[in-house]
Amino acid sequence: MPKKLIKRWLPDHQTIKTNKHLQIFGDVLHDANLWHLNRRSVAKAFAIGLFFAFIPVPFQMMLAAGMAILAHGNLPLSVALVWISNPITIPPIFYACYKLGTILLNEPPQEFAFELSWQSLTETLANVGGPFLLGCGVAACFFSILGYTAINLIWRISVRSNWNKRSNRK
Picture: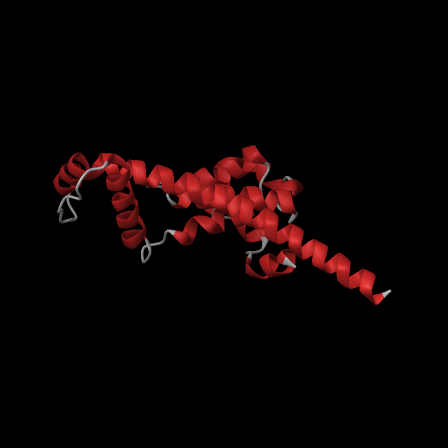
């Protein structure tokens, strides 16, 4: 069942409650509903975590945590799913988002080189920022909806399968 699989991967709720970056949420983190693993909270967590994984902003984990609190999704799962976009996966994900944006805007892809300087960053964003941000927004919405739908479907199939196994044993 998905619940058992997800429980194995999630960090302990005490670890997240004591995380220094999440202390801005205060006592809200002690709400037991943020830690429950049920179909609705897990589906919301997947939608939130996948959405913020594709949004190119700093502090994605805090944004995902805030949205999980507002939407009553599973908090640790929302925060963990943001790490799909980690330092290793960010370049291919963001390049794919840029390519998606150029396709949607019907623009030819532009050549660019990235250097670690503020001037390079502003020049690159001025040249490719529109297609990049559009691609990130579309990918965030698409994968968020896909994750929400897939988790609901997988969860329902799993529960139905377990019910069928129980009824066959009788």
